[in-house]
Every structure is written in structure tokens, then in C-alpha cells.
Image 1 (cartoon, rainbow, N blue to C red):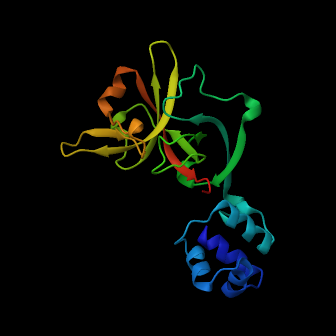
Image 2 (cartoon, helix red, strand yellow):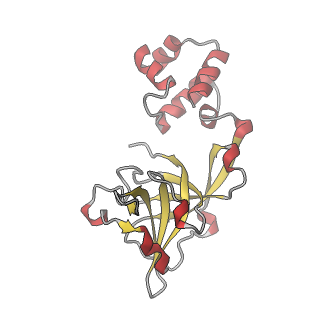
Image 3 (cartoon, helix red, strand yellow):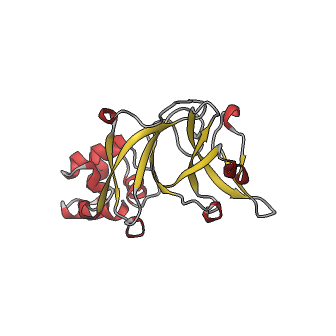
Length: 210
């Protein structure tokens, strides 16, 4: 994103001071934005797109190296559903970089709802994920995963958790929530029993502006 923003600004013949003045911020703060030191919010992205006469997605990545992913479902702890995927008329598309390492993967996306992941993924965030694979040992410490829990009545719940290892090397799936109701870790071995499964590894997250 930082290289794209810098490239587009220069192509318009604008200095950092020009853009900062137009945004109503000091040059130092714009410099931090362009260097990726502060988060580019959706409203700021729209302001920049208007100012630089481009599409908001152009500020994130080169259009020739983008990939479209459909958001087809939501994930939220304690929301049990028979079918987690939305009706097709509710799907929408987002754009992510066309990462060469991910070109062989099918990518899915889900919208975060509620506080069960809010330390890392606030309500409204969109998580783009690839299939994690069947072997739990392929999990990476500190990476985030989409987890699905199934009850005996067939109802399902999906959320995101972070994989960590304890001192013995055992993997745990840790919640990322400030809500005490959603702070129970899951021992990875429990996923083998069939009640909990790992749907995919989070590759990108698009954060909602707060």
C-alpha cells in the first residue's frame, strides 16, 4: 500500500505537503501514513482517492495484481446456524493482492460479527482465508484460523482463533476477545474428535473503520 500511495501521489505531481494540506493534517502525519506507520481507514482512503483521482483499491495494490474474493458468510461466536453460508444475493466482492504464493489456493472470505474476535478482528472486519489442510501439525504458531464447531443437532458456529504453542510444544487455539464469554482456549487435539474443525488459515484481514 505504501509504495502504491507514494507512486500515485508522485504521478499526480503532488508533494507530501500538498496532500497533507488537502487532507487538513500536518506533513509529519501524512508521512507516517505513506510509510505505513498508521492505519489507512476507509474514510481516509476515499478522501485520498478523490484527491489523487483514482479508485480506492488503487491505493492498496496495483490493479494488474489484484484478486477478487466473494464474502459469502459471517463468523460470530455463540451464533448457531444450520447453514453458515449466506443466500447468494447477499454475497459481495472484495479485492486483495494477487499473491504469487496463494495463486494455487481457493480463497474464501467471511465477515466478522460481534466481540468474540475484537482484540484482533473488530466487528465488521472481513477475513480472507485459504484451506488449512487436513493435518493439524501444519498449523503455524501465531497465525489465525477460521474454526467451525458442530453440535450434535447439526447446528454450526464459526469464529477465528490464533494458534499458539505451550511450553511442551502442544498447539492451542486461542480466542482474541476482550469479552469474558469468548476467552476459552481450545486444545488442538480436540479438533480431531470431529466436533471442531479448522476451515482455513487467515491470509488477509480488512478492518472496519471505528
